Image 1 (cartoon, rainbow, N blue to C red):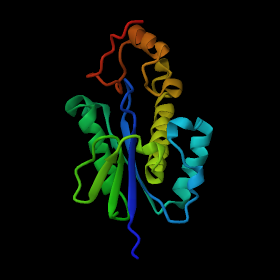
Image 2: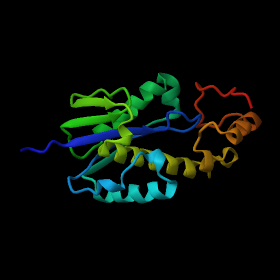
Image 3: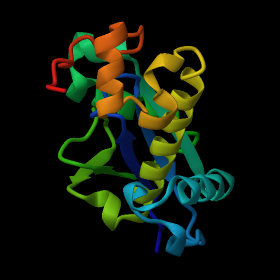
Image 4: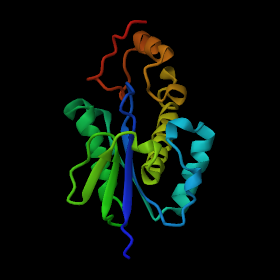
Length: 187
């Protein structure tokens, strides 16, 4: 029996007011310790970091794709998410036979692909991609917070927390804020 190469894809960063959307594509080897995987939202930041390290060290292939705030503003968050997924997919060092994507939609690809609602809760390859996407984006936001410390990106990662919205009201938007998103959320 021939083993099919399965690639999981997920994204992080659809909901924030600032920063990129990051997608990850992951192919796991058959001997990967699946018991360490979970939906990235169910893991603490420390747990995610540890599991992310193990995934990057042991996966058959890992790649990320990014869509930047300017692209999100130009083509909308849905299309930007699919673009980030496509970029992650074409950056893989191994061509998969099957692609499993978290959510409702799949990126444009000639490879057989299927979307799975809540796939990050039960499909190991998607769980791994979820963890890689989240840790990659979060790290980028923490690093960017050194450039723009006023918005506390190291804490809120660009999500519309009360403190973040107060800072937007006080200072206006930064270069990485999504101009097409609503900022007039009542405080």
